[in-house]
Length: 571
Ligand code: HAS
Image (tube, rainbow, N blue to C red; front, side, top):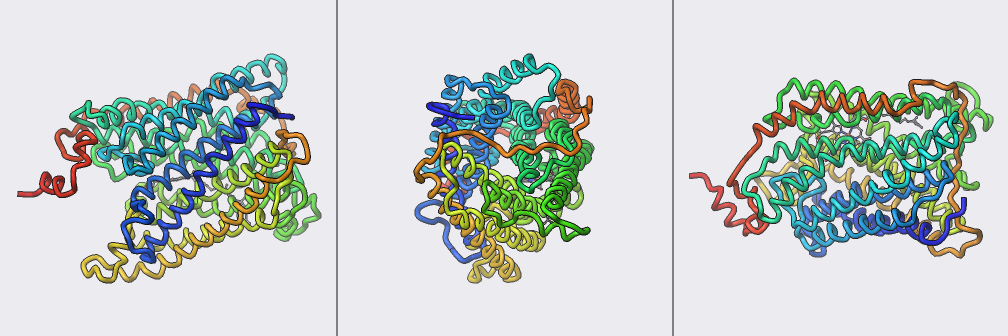
């Protein structure tokens, strides 16, 4: 399908702008891992403080890159699958809000006015531009869903009353329905708690309520990152592997189960938080195990699809068919396979560690340690990042009308990244179990041998192994940059277009349970109401704190450390 003019510009820039920011985000990640291994021992680098760098790393990589990509990919999927035009006015409005919001938040972070990490927990307070910027980014990201995708889907349904909604469209609509439902609690805490505090308009605040609302958003956020990857795994990977999707109804069921279970699980980030009853934490722990179910379904369906593809390529035996998959193929679009398979291998680690995190009792061992950092670099930094990077390269080549350049570099990139993060994950899991904290510049504390009080020499070996993993992953990223830069500046050889390698399904029997979205949305709302009414009520009644230095307005919050220390001095 051909794409021209403003729409082509918008789609291309939705991919290129976050990629450019990602270069900074990845380099700051390198600084983090070297600082945490005690290889760089300083509180800052090139004028960027460790925690400012950590904020930029998290916000750029996990929020900006992912949100821009999800919108660009969603636009491309809807265009390609429904064959209905997108409204240029809507797309411009969405683009302006997202780019404007990102620039505002970037200014606040780069000038040191928003060193609040990507979770921006109260009582840390950022400059108001950070909150307004983040809000604009979120509003911009949801506009296409309401003003383009839903109207286009309804029109498509009217024209095709008996046809099944294309699988990729279902996945995308589920993802943005989820997105809409979760940005409401986030907007509530940002607009009614954080912004007034930042502007000096509030004298008291409730951090417990804020964190409960944040994690109402925050865990489902990880599935907002994951679902575009699952769309690719279900609809494109089977074809790249040489075969078909094993089961279309299983894929639909997985998407719908994500809608149902992604949201009412946020309390598993707050197991150690005082003020919330343990019964509700346990209830959400059970639901967390339920949200792993669609990923188990995915593991089996994807593995069966890979086997189907491999057998079409001549694969035989119980295990030797694995050898017939196109791991190194440069033919056509098959290079993309490397991104998906590397991501899947990383996600095996991410899934296992996630299930360990979910256990109410085991979580007490790993919470706030380096273990968690290992977990999310094999999930959002693994399958999600690799599939997004692969698809960014693929779409840029299509939208520019060129072939992917420097394919050996494009192929080496995901394997180096995967190897790097497997090493990183193992190393950080071990240091985490040894007690190494996350979100901490341990190079100038626990890993500084001159610090007699804190020094933990036993963390040194695995921290260095972790740094080796991080360096390997960055080399993989640079290899990707070579291919992307070549593709970005290559001379066009054909008309710009959007096209995806969409697979047929082996099993495609109509299954009423997974056709209609409405009962699933109703059940989702009911489960959210059951799981969150009491925890939100509890947070509202128990969490208010007043007149504590950290909870005052930004101006007061920026008082020198000395004054803060005086204010909090014990008698
Ligand atoms: Fe998580 C913390 C539990 C999935 C991201 N998670 C985080 C944080 C992030 C994150 C960013 O219960 C840190 C937040 C912060 O800053 O504090 N997570 C889970 C569970 C799952 C899970 C149960 N997480 C994800 C995904 C993420 C992500 C996906 C990003 C995209 N997570 C937690 C918990 C915490 C947490 C607690 C809080 C910890 C704390 O104390 O702070 C599940 O959804 C995972 C299910 C996955 C599977 C794996 C299926 C495997 C597949 C691969 C098959 C491979 C094949 C190929 C076929 C069951 C699909 C094989 C090929 C060969 C060649 C072998």
